[in-house]
Image (cartoon, rainbow, N blue to C red):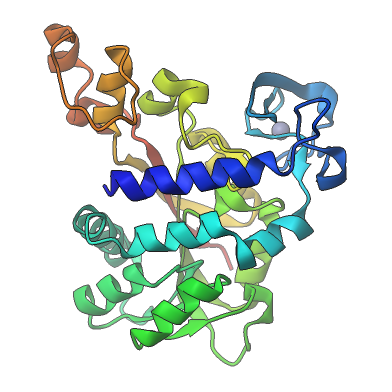
Length: 326
Ligand SMILES: [Zn+2]
């Protein structure tokens, strides 16, 4: 992890988030936001229970379907503009390119490709990485699987330019604007769904450019990971502007099923174990300190370890792969 660069990103993001607050109420300003129904089951706000307010952004859980999300939500048009010119989002691209981040990501991305290799048939070769940033996953795919042709889409100008300079095939447009001459067999949504104000739209767009029985693999933060259950509102994942939706295993499965997918696999990846251990010792989970001095060894040996967390689907991120039923 590039801790320094990550700190810089969150500092800038917090500054930009503050610009959307109403000075009197300290809450997200009505002119930049709107009240929404549940983005998964459409339940009205009387069914939303408030979980917490963080830095002016309100997080709720739908009592009908257990979806966690921000309500009110930043207006989608404003979000679109921010993906074009946000300093914070540009720093995020630097994180993707950081040499300190790439070793763990290489292993992570290769395991995602192993999952595709397990479920795709030999004729399924064309992959589209939606929101590919500066293209690190595409590079890994090109090196790891010589029988996959990988392309990406990306809206950020900075990330797009870096990806193109690497010689990768990237389209700077929304999925719905892709020229439909080429269709794809596999899609990846890595760190994408949680950013979308209307998540159903992306599935409709995928169907426009998907071959029969296309596979979609998505990774999102897991609201019921051990990490999030320990850190709760202290987790940097709960930012309210970039991340709007917070899935559980049930809600992610439901999202795929409602969009016509058969679920092939759902599991969790990454654990955030070091952050969890710091939180348990009353140390800021994001400080660059490593100590086990105050930990209970039985708890650590039996439960708070990577093997236990992943075996019980308590990992930091949820990973799903679904096959389009058509
Ligand atoms: Zn709901």
